[in-house]
Length: 141
Picture 1 (cartoon, helix red, strand yellow):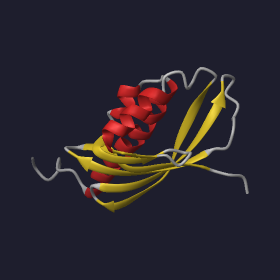
Picture 2 (cartoon, rainbow, N blue to C red; picture 1 turned 120 degrees about the horizontal axis):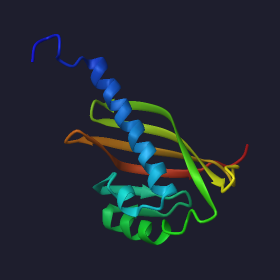
Picture 3 (cartoon, rainbow, N blue to C red; picture 1 turned 90 degrees about the vertical axis):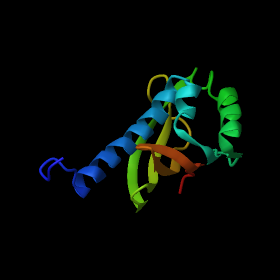
Picture 4 (cartoon, rainbow, N blue to C red; picture 1 turned 90 degrees about the horizontal axis):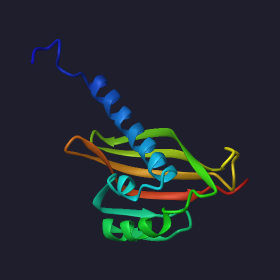
């Protein structure tokens, strides 16, 4: 590879941002379409997840057991939308990712309080994976 085709720091950062945005989009897609395996494929095996209601799940086995119970049927009366808000690169291979979530009626109207997820992602073998995560309900005021 010559210098004209070598990736620059800016191009690597842009690719990482695009990949992180895709992880957030896949979270939305897997939840909207109730696809536990797609959702679970986004996690490291040793990940932790705290649900919007404060339930701590440690490791992929616990996250999987919860997801397989909670996700199927969860979108029968609505949908969810996630928006990437901010990314802080802690290191080139670790990022704190802030998103905004909103559950919706079948007509696309907001229902309940929005959520304010924080995903700490690690880049491993070229993939950004969910590592330490908390989905917090955002209360009014």
